[in-house]
Amino acid sequence: MTVRFVLLKLLHGILLILGVTLVSFVLMVWFGPDQTYTLIGKNASPEQIAEVRRELGYDQPFLGRYLDYVADLATLDLGASNASGEPVAGLLARTVPVSLALMLPGFVLGNLLGIALGLAAAARHGRFGDRLISGLSVTGMSISFLVIIILLQVLLSTPYGLDLFPVRGWQVDGPATYAYYVTVPTLALVFVTLGYNTRFYRAVFIEEAGKDHITTARAFGASRAEILWKHVLRNSMVPIITRVLFSIPLVVISGSLLIETYFGIPGVGRVTFDAITSGDQPVLKAVVGLTAVTFVLLQLLAELAYRALDPRLRA
Image 1 (cartoon, helix red, strand yellow):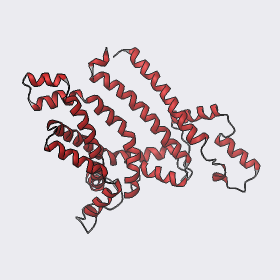
Image 2 (cartoon, one colour; image 1 turned 90 degrees about the vertical axis):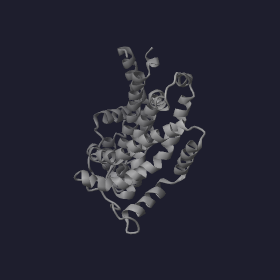
Image 3 (spheres, one colour; image 1 turned 120 degrees about the vertical axis):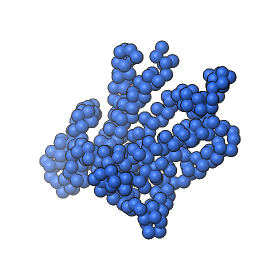
Image 4 (tube, one colour; image 1 turned 120 degrees about the horizontal axis):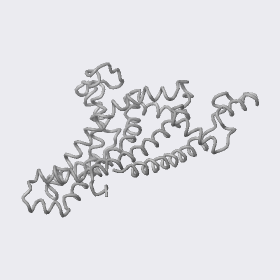
């Protein structure tokens, strides 16, 4: 891996970040709602209106406001929430760890189980086991996330079921309480993602299993386990890494939005939902902008991982 490659990728990443932040700026800020009267009301004097618009940067040209937006994202100077007055940077610092702790177990388990089931289906391609796994995957994909949450909640968190876990809330102060509050959301996330993950990994593994080097390995007497784990799985790491890395922002933001809202968990998904319903633009700007930047940074990380895992890309 040459220094030139790294520098080129960094330059590419900077250009991508500028492009992505430009789009989010245009949609969220330039054409976003005017916050003037939200902050000072409709009976303010012209002087007060002019002062607020100057503080918000509305008197600046497009380029000036965009550069200020990029600088704010880079320095995490994200302003304060219109709803609570709390600094947005502090709000995210408080809520993002909660969302990561909430979503990480289900995210990891969903991918590991998807890989295991995908390998099992590929090993039995065209037979009953493969058809069973594929059918269950499609069934899982067709069930609403909300329906799964409600069913698990009734089964595990109410007197109508086992009544083992809380219906709502997040009061974690150690491993025991963490397991107590995270179990039902984790099971919900695993159930809703497992079908999609299994279908994706199955397709990747079946494609890899049909290549010439696998046929050669079989001809030389390699066992099924050796073919699956040493050849198929190892040579499928590029699409696996791509799926895992690019799923992280969506899982943390989109997935946690529904779970946190339904279970009353104070993470970034709940904050985003509240910002959408209340029109809290500073919070929305920060979440959208930082999510876009995270996508770009993960793309750069994926590029570096590809070259480390696949010798053909180092040439």
